[in-house]
Length: 251
Image (cartoon, rainbow, N blue to C red; front, side, top):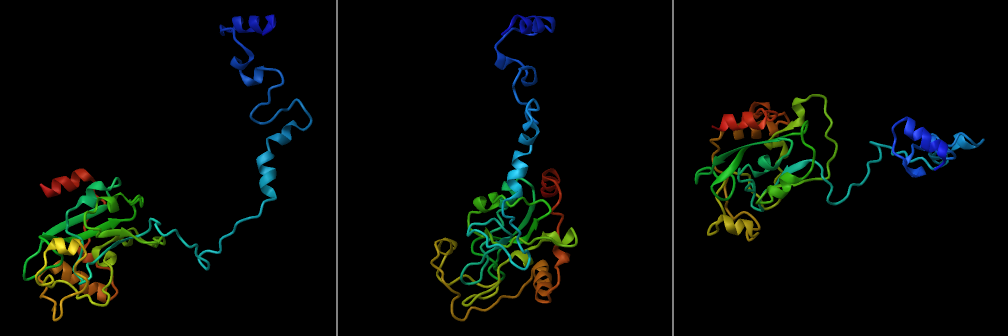
């Protein structure tokens, strides 16, 4: 450091030090953030990234005509799964709602009965909603689910024309029936327990399984409106309320 620089530091009450301790614009020959303007080509250094990108091939995706293939474990729209005989895997435990950092999931559980059974075990998810206005698709709800009832699909097109349509209900999230399934409510496979279901020992509905009479009015309305292709607004609950309001409603 020269005597002139040292006197300059003393006049501004700055500690004496090496060149690296001084501001860049005060050290001779040091380029600034916009480039070194002390040389003829100095201003061009500030546009180095811009010039290099100008000659690269542009990547234009023709969406929605050509949709990008997502990864196998992509975090997309949720779905509620069924057991191979058609009973629902969701047991209404609400662990997914408690694990959600955005408070986007709303669940109301109810008790199964022998006359009206929707899932193995004691309880089922009577009301299930996911508010995609809040959901951040982090997957923590999937990790919290003890029965693998809730999983994520590869569907990523969630835009809509109203806020209400982005609150998905159980009727919209529940996966459809496949071969060997009977729509709930119906009895469990004879001679089995809920643990047999969780171990995957039930592979289809028992021969002669019949659907039981539905007494749950919310389920009746949701199934009827879903069959008609309508939005089951009648069973919508305030999924946007805060955790404090939800706790007050439970008490």
